[in-house]
Image (cartoon, rainbow, N blue to C red; front, top):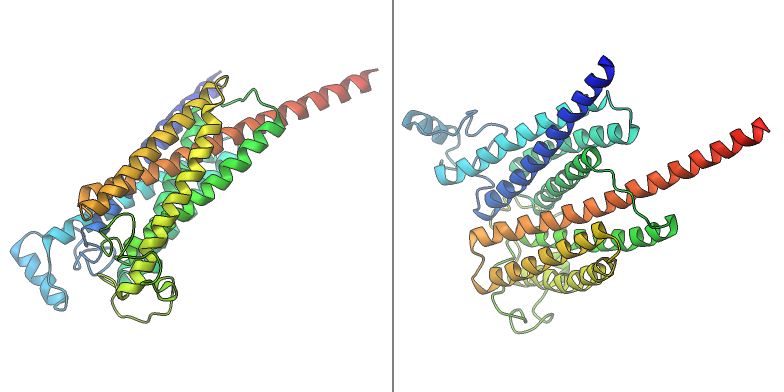
Amino acid sequence: MEKKLEKKMNLSMTKKLAITATAFALVVVLLGAFTRLSHAGLGCPDWPGCYGFSHIPTQNQDIEIANSAFPERPYEFEKAWPEMVHRYFAATLGLFVLALALLSLKAENSVTRRHSFGLLVLVIFQAALGMWTVTMKLHPGIVMAHLMGGFTTLVLLASLSWRYTTSFVSSYSTNEINQFKKLIIFSLIILTLQIMLGGWTSANYAATICFELPICQGDWFSNSDYISGFTFWGHGAENYEFGILDAAGRIAIHTSHRVGAIITTLVLSFLCFKLIKQTNHATLNKFGILIMLLLVIQIFLGIFNITYKLPLYNAVAHNGVGALLLLTMGLLLTSLSQSSQFRALQKQSSHNKTEEGDNYE
């Protein structure tokens, strides 16, 4: 009895920790977007501290020391604080993930253990990407990888929370579930590629190269250099702050993101149509409505980014809604995977009972 009570308390604590970590991860993603979009990615030229300090320098003597240590990059408080606040939150998130991994050792479900330790490995790699973002002076490939690492961490934490809090069982057959899963996985791949394009646009400072709709710089393609725009490595620059590509390279990136937005909208709209049609299944129906709502908001935020010349908080919101779209899709896939696992267990249990009956006879 005591062991059951202890197990229940541990599960309750793990659930709360997983949900808290998920909320924290969303904050970290938004802070990362704010840091990047306010051009504060090199607000602290060293890592993990800031100008040699573990805190944000505010005192005159600390600022003098900072400027002496990095004379090539004078201290700017308005850029240092977003960078350090982001690091503080990211470090705290790392501790949450470590705690979840340790708690998962007591879990009976091996999927949960693998999930938790996979998250821990990802967060450690994400910390390394954060360091390389600074040491490699905002290399676009590293910046985009860091962005995608943050999004992936958020989705996996949300999926883990969902596993701890929800037991989704669909009334559909295994074949029907697998058909839905194929469509969702395809849609998830398209959405991920579009988010990567958005990250590449931001990392190369290409968001502000076009402020016209729907055409960019008078033509979709003739003013674009796709080879330059999508050379992911080998530029050899010492510093990538504010971008190193010419206008043609940036136009290529920006127009690709717009074309990707059209494709993503069509694919996700079809998925939502299929989900909303499932009127006899409330959970799938709600997922369809939620994805459609987020998609519409994201489209308007993207249009506002262009027409109002990338206002900071609108651009941050665009990142945030993109993260929520990916998160929702991840939860939808997790739900159907849970249902598949339940069906498999049911089948195995039924098979075992049949064998027992045969043996009894």
